Image (cartoon, rainbow over all chains, first blue to last red; front, side, top):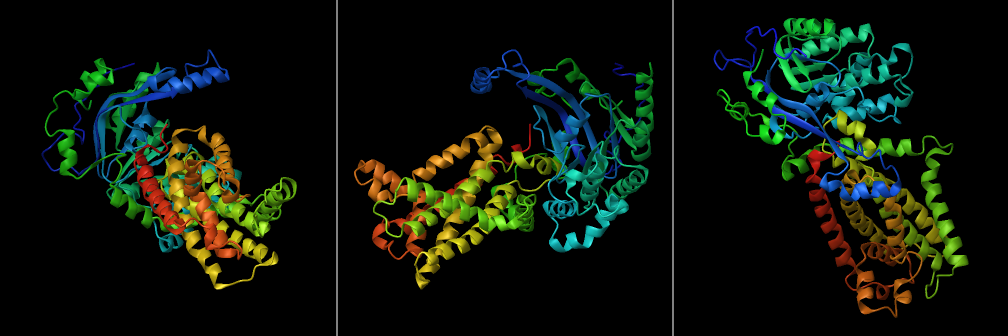
Length: 273
Length: 312
C-alpha cells in the first residue's frame, strides 16, 4: 500500500496555531484501539466444558485474540468542517468513528471532543418491535428533547425520512421496514437535533436519490451552524460532494489528510492498479 | 500529508511502546483541548451531573416504559387483558399446588389472601430483576445509536413493573375482598409498602442491569436464583411456623430477608388475621433501610460503569 506518496504540502486546518483557525471540535492524539475478540481462538474445542474453561480463564487472556484496529492516528477537526474517511474494508474507519464517539476505549492515546458526538451507523437499529412513530418519539426524548419539542419536530422528521411517501408506514413496527427505510428514519431522527459533532457511518448509502439530496443539504446546514461532520463512505463521489477534507486510513494508520479532492485522487490512484 | 508525528508510531505497533508519546510541536493535544474546553471522549460524568441528567430524561423513562408495556402483549389476541390475566393465573396455579396438593397452609388463617399477597408482592420484585438483567443487552441498538444516561433503561423497566403492580394490586384487593376481608383504613398502609418496595426494586434493577451487561450468562441463571429466593421468602408458607425449630442464625437471616419483609407488611396491611404480632418488631425500619441502601448503592454501582455499556 502506498504509504506516504503525494505529500503535497497543503496547509491542513490542523497545523497552524497562528491566523486564528476555527475552534477545534475533535482532537485525536496518537490513538491506538485494540479489539479483544473472545472465542476466536476457541474453535478447536467447541464443547461445553471447553467453553466453561475459557470463561474461567478469560481474565488471563487465554482464548482472546487481539486486533490492533487503529494505530497511532492523530488529527484535529474544527468547526464547520465536513471530513470524509476513506480506505479499503477493514482499514479502521468505523473503529475510529466509534472511538471518537466514546463507544470504544482507546488502548493508548486520547480523544478529546466538544460535547457529546453522535454516531449514526448502519446497524444501529433502534427498537424493532415498536412502530416508527414510537421510535421517533423515544429517539428524540433520549437525545434530551422535551415532549413539547418532540411534538413540534415530529412532522418534520417523518417528512425528512420519506417513510410515509408510499403510504402510512410510520405506524407499523420497525421490523417491517426495509433496511433503507430503517436507515432513513434513524438518520432523520438523529439529524433533527443540532450536533457539535455528527459521525455518519455509511448511513447515507442505503437511501434513494431524493433522500440523499435531502441529507446532503442537512449536512451542509449542520456545518453552517458550526458543527463538524464525519462521513465514512465507500462512494468517493459522495465524499467529494459533501466533504471539504478527507482522511485516508490503511491498516489502521493514517496515510493522508488533506483537501477532499486531492486525497480521493490519491486514493483512487493507489487502488486503480 | 498531514502529520509527521504519525510516523514514529508506524514503526511501533505495540501500544505500550507507543504510549510514550514522541515530543510534539506546540501546542500539545492536551493543551489545545484544555484551551477550547474539550473533554476526553466517553468519560463518565460526575455523580451529581449524572443524577441531574437522569432527571432530565424522565420523559424518556416514562415514554420508554409505556412503549415497552404496549409492545409486551402486542402479539397476543387478548392484548393488555393479560395484565390482569397473568397475575390471576399465577395465583390460581400457586393455590392449586401449595393450597390443595401440598397443603403448606399449616398454621395460617385466611390462606388464600395470605398466599396471593405473597405471590403478587414477590412477583413484583422478581419481574423487575428478570427484566433488568437484559436492560443493557436487550437495547444495544438504542445504546449504540444515541447518547443518554444508561440508568434510564433499568429505571424505566422498574417503572414498567410499578405500573403493572398497580393493576395487580386491583386484582389483589378484589381477591382479598372475595375471600372475606372488608375494606378498612388499614389498607392504606399498602401505599407506603409499595413505595418502599418500588425503591428497593429500582436499586436491584440498577445492580442487575450492570451485572447482566458484564456477564451475559446471568440472564439464563437468574430465573433459578429468583425461584430459590422466593421459596426462602415465606410466599406460600408461614416462616414463623416452618422455621420454629431452626437454629437462631437461620431465623435471623430469614427475618432480614427484604422480600419477606415487604410481603409480611403487605399482609399486615390487608389481612385482618395477620396482626402486628406476626411482624418482626423492626419490620418498617428494616423495609425502609433496605429500600434506601439498595437504591443508593445500586445507583452508584451502575454509574461506576456508565462509560462501558454498549462496548464490545
